[in-house]
Image (cartoon, rainbow, N blue to C red; front, side, top):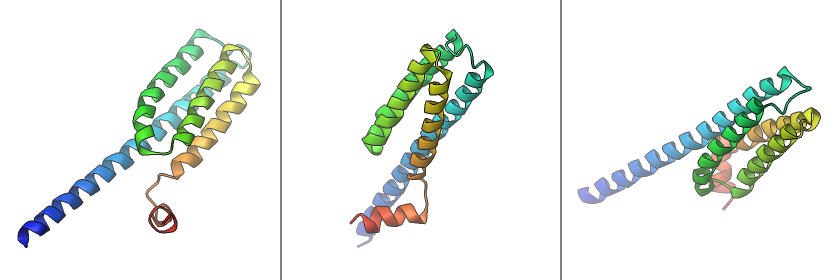
Length: 138
């Protein structure tokens, strides 16, 4: 009987640790993206007439590459559709920047920032999310 309790405790600890690691990775990934988007927003607003600078394009390429690395892991943990929408948003911002279209780049950037805030909220550790995940869905 003691062996059964030890096995149950070990499995419970493994589940709690894996959930904590998953939660941490997901939230750090969205925090990174949000921070980078705000950084780019300040870069974009620095010179509204010439947004297609090499520095801006390089920043977006680096952001896209770094996000793509995180995206591979995130697709195993969370819904693919939201991740795809983020990927599309980054690509649109890059295209508008390369075309030197400040109005569209800013609009797309603001939309993506708002989307990431709301989407990342779905993964916060809250009573509402726990109830939805474990009670309402089933």
